[in-house]
Image (cartoon, rainbow, N blue to C red):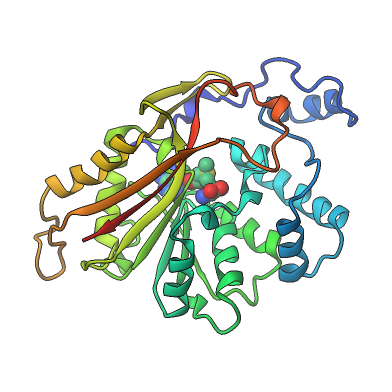
Length: 317
Ligand SMILES: C[S@@+](CC[C@H](N)C(=O)[O-])C[C@H]1O[C@@H](n2cnc3c(N)ncnc32)[C@H](O)[C@@H]1O
């Protein structure tokens, strides 16, 4: 099994007083909880995008932006104590990034028609909720699966969206690097979503991820993996100095090479019955602005490092 994250570097340890001048007593908060004393813990969001307010009002029934914000802060702070990821500290989970894909309309249609979709590294499962919402009442949402290394995130997702008794998706804790990762789903998944996931891992680790996904995907044309991750004009390993994490940014060639390497590897698990025959991938990707409607841009020490957002789709031919 490969080591999942560089946890030992403890990037969330307090560094400097980045939070001076805020209206809350952050100095006190920092003394109470030193992990909040970092640049990528943003205490509040200035404004929620209209679409986010609309989603929370309609999906969980809390009315009004201020009430929604208070609810979000409460759950976000609980998640922060589990693992202080930038996507939690900076409210990136409110982006509902799945719909940014140019293939999203097609994905929604396939889900409405019964496709099985796995969100790997789903955190709160926000993108599965967005997908279910957009697929509309009556869509077979029991075919949605969310998995994450941290079981607490999956539980907090039910708190955030107040849907424990009504959301039919299946949530399963799991480590993508484990030999028995989602074995019950091998060969049964049509679509995999990877939101801000691949960049956490080195290139050899990402190859293992793609191999695991090949095991899960139905061995037929049209099975697909899509997602977003950190990108750059020239891809490769990248140290995000502001948070002290070693990450990986893709460019269009490196993401294509990643899936091509899985094709070059040939059949896995014996090919035929129970295994995975080899077929090539078609990979499309684009690089765009790295940002979020929810971010306080002044807080981002890493702006200007030429990081971009990559959106990609890899489809088996
Ligand atoms: C950066 S967050 C992205 C969350 C969400 N997909 C999004 O787009 O906001 C990465 C997620 O991957 C999960 N994760 C990290 N390593 C993992 C592993 N080895 N197996 C499964 N999930 C993992 C983390 O717990 C975290 O929730």
